[in-house]
Length: 267
Image (cartoon, rainbow, N blue to C red):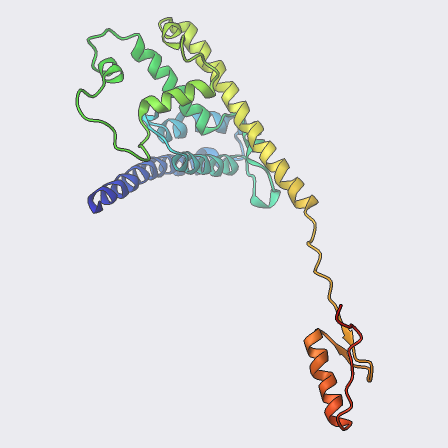
């Protein structure tokens, strides 16, 4: 059991460190062009975005066609994507701009939709390969012996492709036949990735709207009503019934044993 946990932890940190390596390489490429391009006031923002798409993004997503990504990887990549675009467009955190508005101003899709498009294009390329090619054999091969362990399973590349097909609104039963035609498949993937990107943006907007609605409609919980018990013999207000009994006992002791009853008789 210890070996399994240790192996899973090592695999998790290895994948995360590999993703950080890609982000570090992209950050280095961005830094080398910072003064000459991205901070140059003589260049238009559109030109800077084109340089970013031609140099930084390919460095960041190098080999993404074969990645098996989890949500933690996509969040890290999206965070770097937003930081870079905000630096290029000179958007400060004080501007209170949403991520969706930044992407719309830059006219660039999300990293999640871009990776899905890259993977589906590569998968179509593998489908069109001859059966003797190794990538196609690996894609369609299955284990002869052994089985997957029970419990939570590691995500496979095929699982990633299936998810991307669903998100891009591509038919799961006919996609292999459509992938045999290169032009048709590229157009289908491009349109599907655009729909996926729109769905992501709409989901982010809906989530933000619901969060604001909850914040505005949230009512302060009323405090429970406090019951007080005034003493019938003095001006003191007692906070509880048992406290009133103790207070009346004090009056009883002071006045020579005369008993008093509370204002709230037992029912």
